Length: 543
Ligand code: G16
Picture 1 (tube, rainbow, N blue to C red):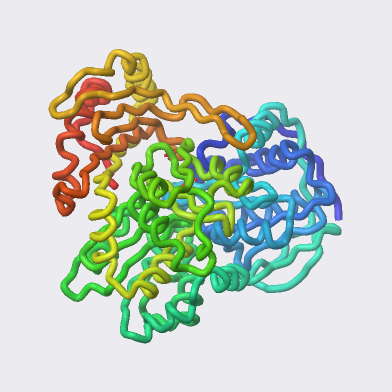
Picture 2: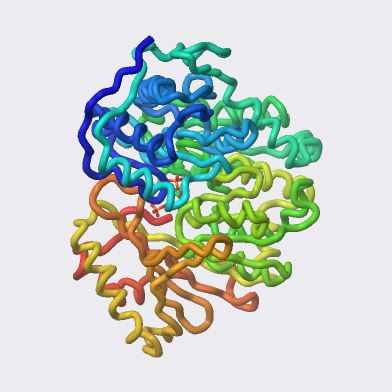
């Protein structure tokens, strides 16, 4: 029953990136590492005294142990209540919902998202604020500042409760409530979508495959898709969360979700396929024989959102991250609503959602969501698609073909160059930034450069400015590429090259994506001087 005040020293590098602090698991397991960062979260938000928090994670290796430490530290810092998912599990969108529903003072989410898990893989911790969303930069900066001046952390010597048992317990005067991770979230989904229409769709023999990738969405997908909506047993594959995600990489893209891709490309493919990532905030959407790019999915969901009860009155606006294709902008023009372009990172959507200026948001990195929570939400996207498919009673192929025939098609891909030497990656970006003004007006192959931009964002709600958020080279006619360094990698630098080629409705809308992009890929590699700057000739991952 004692709070122990433990002397400590600042640990270098505890700076949150695009989405919290992500490092190799052994780094987090080093003595004092979690303790220093968690104490800095509490210090950075003005203390934990009298506060309530949601705590949960994606179940990856070290999740349970870190949660035990967080519970004991919350108690020692004077928190009054912690709500934890059973087994330490909470999907990121479910955690966001619980923070909002219970009006807590925020939440601590343990995840490295789509990065692999295990003793030598990746781990992460992030703090979400009371609106349910990732901490904005001014909060992460305060947390980081606390990590650089920390001298002590506080921890209770009372053991954390058994997280497998539902119910209330007491840790040093603080209440710990272990809850079912699925039920509140499933109830929320039932308020947004026409579950009867989706049930009727499955009743008509509609088939789907949902790949939970051995990650957190397994229990959610079993409960909602199979038990509630009547999808056939076996619809959910890889549905049991495991600490190392079955040895895989829980990233829902055509590279890492190959099992799903093979199923969807087979003669016997179901009507609809989807996957989600480690912590359940990302989604991948497929039709029979067809991959839908996240940027196209955002555009098509925006164009069709009124089929779902939650959005039947229309959307107030839509927002996309800068590297996301401009497909949704064309839909916004057609709907007569505002379209916002933000930096990469879901945290930049928070103010727009809170202010009611955007209803739907999305990112090229397989994230889509709405104002129902303040995180992107993988299963939500799947359910919105199902609602639209049920309501329109058309196949995904028919819906996407009609969409492109009306708006044209933004062929899109992202090339990732991973674990690049940091100095070389910085040099590539610095050189391109310096060259931007001189590129304008130059012609490369079939493209003439219309503009070169070092992307900066001024938040229209609070006026905060975020500079240096990526470089954009735009061409006459709507095609463009963008370059930035990832803020979620854990090894060297990851260069992300985003490529987009616009085809007007009267052009060929059925080209293979790599063929449609071949010219812009060559031009982009040339302009950024990829081979000389990095020694690489090919991307590690294309999504
Ligand atoms: C996080 C952020 C996203 C971002 C993605 C990739 O997603 O929440 O907003 O698009 O990382 O970021 P970067 O390009 O900097 O690696 P997640 O799913 O990893 O939390």
